[in-house]
Length: 172
Image 1 (cartoon, one colour):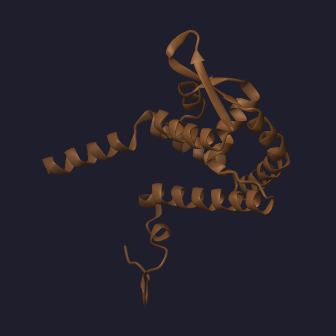
Image 2 (cartoon, helix red, strand yellow):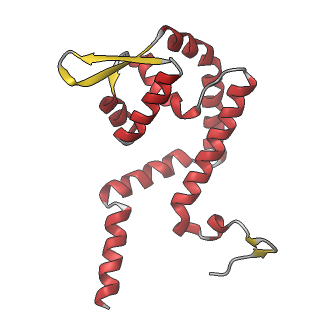
Image 3 (cartoon, rainbow, N blue to C red):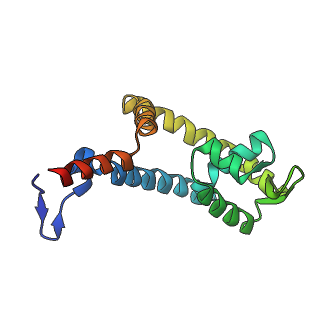
């Protein structure tokens, strides 16, 4: 595969890599989307990080939830939710109590400040979701493609697939 070079190096390496750069492309798109959402929050005078949106919405819609429950609902790691928990707590948007059914677990809940923040964010979230629907339609079904990718990874992870390729290479 050839790479177009500029005086300073390769030009859009992730795009030129096609399917081989799927993770890098997803990270790049995620950064762009999160950055644009961050600009909307900043222009609205709200100190809020886009990575907090899903946990905050879950807590506002479902009430107190454990880190494990949030991770399961979002399909992300416990560690990612724990990091968000700490930064949301530092921002005084959430707090937690010990789960009465499991002393090892904590139930996260919105603080009064968190509930006020959700109210302030509601019109922004509505606009961001409307924009996301437009983007999905313009990109001709990105969410459906991501769903297909998710199912393919559930059938066989990237790790399993790459390991199989490595085993075949060592036998050859």
